Image (cartoon, rainbow, N blue to C red; front, top):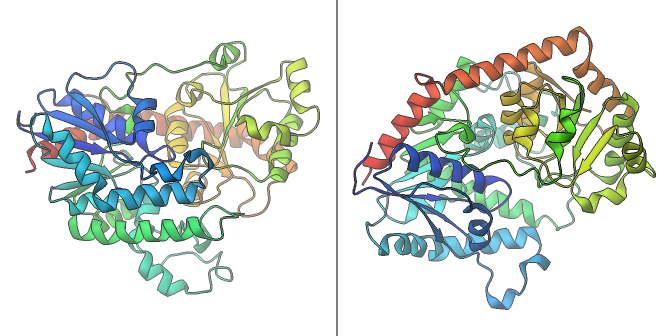
Length: 458
């Protein structure tokens, strides 16, 4: 596939979990088109984390500036909103263009940019730009029609929170409260993160409509009903559903890192008995809700595996960790190989923030989900899990989390007729996902068409 003169630069957004998803796309391109040069472009610290292990011979790694000059000192002391702002400013101010020139200096010049949609400055470098969206597709659709939604809702989002968006194609199951326009709650940055993200999305929407040759979305064909698929096709130029990206050819070449022994611990548990808990790398619960979650888990009596950052461990109820360790009822770890954990037969329920990566991994494992969304696409994802695909339930639905809600919801996922129905629906999605990546599956076909496109653009 492709031309030997093609050089595709895959540009990652180096925050949250975006970069591993773009690396999966880069590995897929390199594997399917071995005669094409593929450069994976990101910041030095991102490349250091991701470029280890076996990579295709035609995949190269190219550094771009983080935006943190020497005067900024150690980024560890810089607020996240400022790190994000500095990076975007540097990329917009020629940093991305210079990195692409560096990528092409040693041989064939870059012929096409496949970039995270947040890296929309790729539209200004004079090359064809194919955008990649890593989050929930319905949230992308909401951003693309965001101007109309904001004009409609105005300043009445709170009073209209439970109003259904039935007048917008594909949005019939969603409510005003589910829209992705608010930032993380409880922020103490004076609104700076909201300001940075608002500007970021404003540029994304303008440039996608004006300059994107095509857009890849992290979903498989048939996942959404026809009305949502049609709305995405109408809003996006040349939409390619090629996900989940981690199932692309060559994307899973790196073995799961189980440094904390999660999989051996699961091996000793009965089938579909364990509650797996993870809120990702960015989202975090308020301290009071964290304690309610711990108490609710303990009250279920079900064994649990909880992936939680160590800085949150002191916030757990007194004696919680000691009791779990003493009776071997739970395992608390700072990190877990989530994809492998969710595919383990012992896992019967997944408590999560419902970030899109978690949603897809839950589907891939055929595991029912309990969702406590926080910001971004998470509310729309959680709504779809409960009311579109019917393989999970919301925790609280906008109300503070309580231990009683956790106990009741988790029990409903693990036992009884309702739990059995949700498990059946989750496993149906798992089957459909795997079928999409079969030799003649629609994700396989779409990805080969996607590779043909990016390798022939000049």
